[in-house]
Image (cartoon, rainbow, N blue to C red):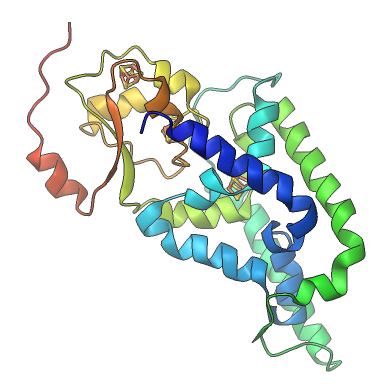
Length: 256
Ligand code: SF4
Ligand code: SF4
Ligand code: SF4
């Protein structure tokens, strides 16, 4: 369990390395083209799957799969602008999310009048047929923008404020059953986990105010906090009923 972040990093690295070949299946920007053509493609199915499971398994797609998040994390280690935790601004998120879907749906209806669109048939490999020449350029543009955003803005600021897939997954992750849980009796409030958290979540606040349940929809379940805690105070737990779980906890013994 202590190696969870190593496995997490390996998982994301593998997806990052295979994206130049399978880009059309992973890059959520292609959902725009899928709607435009009226086709349910592989990229739609994959990300829809991550959104659907987010009330159970939180931001598992963001934390274990997304190559953009990995690139942002790598560049973010050297970021110029260091930020503290800030709650994402929903209106900023909607400024990206609404035009993304509104324009693709509009174009779908315009194109459907020409009779060239489909009726949302399931064709997983559809984009490969139509966009293969674009993939390499879009991949380079995506990775470059992730690196620039990571270098400029600390700790996944772009994930928390700009990514429309992050917005949708975060909405489901608000109810996630898979949660990092801090044992208040073991925690010394050294803040190491917070410093290392990939999304800069103020974990100790949850020890003081939420009986240790880190119920933050920006948590990507990367396991970094588990790995860095020298006191073995954090565990990833599947908790069906948060209220019942909190009631079952004994009051923490005061820390020295
Ligand atoms: S928020 Fe967006 S860019 Fe960030 S990890 Fe999630 S899907 Fe990827
Ligand atoms: S690293 Fe461990 S002991 Fe330190 S604040 Fe985090 S949970 Fe508590
Ligand atoms: S709280 Fe822990 S598991 Fe969640 S994002 Fe931060 S370091 Fe990763």
